[in-house]
Each structure stands twice: as structure tokens, then as C-alpha cells.
Length: 117
Image 1 (cartoon, one colour):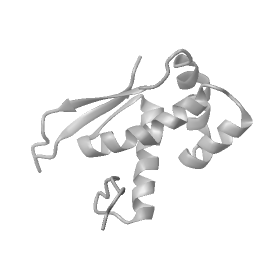
Image 2 (cartoon, rainbow, N blue to C red):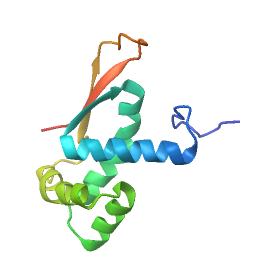
Image 3 (cartoon, rainbow, N blue to C red):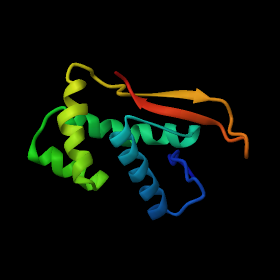
């Protein structure tokens, strides 16, 4: 039974799924917005938003926690120097998901996830 197990599986094993979320989060931090499927965009939101909350207060502890989740020193630096301070007065909701028309090839629902300005 799958009680209290609402995460999307994406047809992947656990390690592959965590690597997918990590790479999507890395791309979002580096580029500010990414275009992906709607399900992946909705799934990355609870992955990235706690990291932005941590990035609002720049401590060694917070940097190490975010580094463990993302795994890229340059992305952590950008998160703590640019993205985190820009959301200093915001209490949450750092990202938005904008739905796009379906993809032609397989009719997958597409979306853009981006940081709120």
C-alpha cells in the first residue's frame, strides 16, 4: 500500500530520481528558469524552496546543508550571494510554475518553473 507516499516516481529508481531532482535544481539556480514537464516542475518546488530559505541567512551550517543537497559549489555561491538575499523579506513562494501548451511529440504537459522576481 502507498499510504502517505505522494511523491512522483517518474518511472525511475530512487537514486535516479534524486539525481534528476538535483540536476533540475542545479539548472534552475544557474539559469533562473527552466522549461520541463509539468510534473517535474511541480516536484522540484518542494526540493528547491527550503534551500532558498536556508540561503536567506548565510552561515557555514546552511551552506553545508545546501551543498549536500545540490552538490555544486558555484551554484551554492550563486544561491547565497544573489538569490537568497533577494528574497530576504519574502516568507515563501520563491518559485512559480507557468503552464505551457503540450509538447508536440508525445503530448506531455509542459511548464516553465522560475524564481519570482
